[in-house]
Image 1: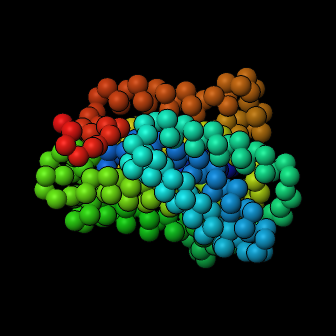
Image 2: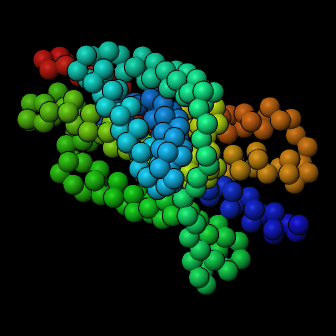
Image 3: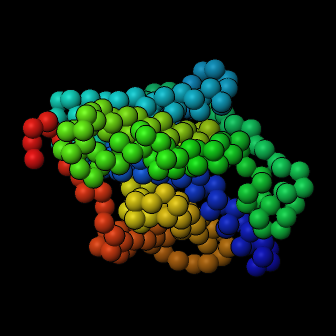
Length: 304
């Protein structure tokens, strides 16, 4: 293969690997703007990946599986919201427990279940798919990729232009003042978590029924944590967050492509590369940009 073909292959792979990160990052961005550092995004993605394949296998429809995966993400978000906002358990503890629970549960279920593989259909845009490098990367994709193109502006509009988004940002910055003005702080935070669950579920389901067509143990392999890093990388701005997803997606694509291209590197170093990059991004951007003032701070009425 020529150098141009190699570059096209890496870029195309990077685009596909960016999609599940971008779906989940749109949700995590909303949750963090509301003041919730949602650690359970990994559980949402992993549970959705398993649920999508299980339902697709049972129904014979990858699209139904995709919807089911999104609903699994919402279910995890609902549990997280109840435990952290109603029962008032530490949100970090809730997130870590949910991640461990879903990892253990899916690891067990995959050993006692047999599923048939299913993938959502691919869309080839006539004419545009023939553009060198860009065509295969952008215009030969599974259909949920084009759904992402609607999710991104919708998420931006919800946060930046709607009344709901104004209240959401208020509870992320100053929940006590928001409460005095009549905004139900924890309800808004739970709603943000549900939006995160929906989109993280779509991301995990896309990974299973869009990209791979099957489910493997620990399939998300820490991508939920990369999503959290992407939001920090993006300085809590949606556009920059998506750039972070692209960077991490390309790093993952390089990890997969370099051995196939004959480049010899330590395999463990290649596996660690996207996470090392995420750590570096967090170290740099977390110290140079201000997060929402109430991020990760629990709210109880009457507290200061």
